[in-house]
Image (tube, rainbow, N blue to C red):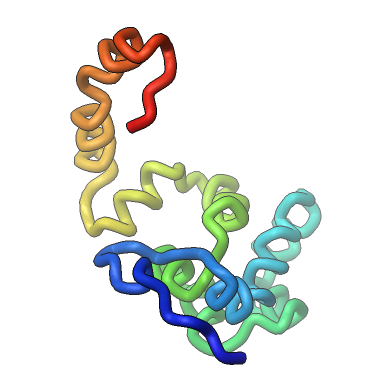
Length: 133
């Protein structure tokens, strides 16, 4: 397939989930979506490589999956919502993953979130309860 280049393709540190990435990561995301069911999460935990093979996950995506390399999974097209189905049952919070994506500690990631939230209540009150950014 020929994919059109977009302005958002070059935003540093951003991994856009669009048609191009969803196409290349279809097998990975299909597998991640299967984790909606507990029996599939158990089957994956018993033998991750075989479970990945069942969905056709291969190459760099499979290696990232086996290495628990969450940033590489995201870069390779893992849908963040499906990705959560892999991480959360393993005890990895979204904050843990966000920290790993940025190469900082979870504590630093949380502190950054709290800092960004400073004054948000005031902004919401001034905007009548809804803030447009």
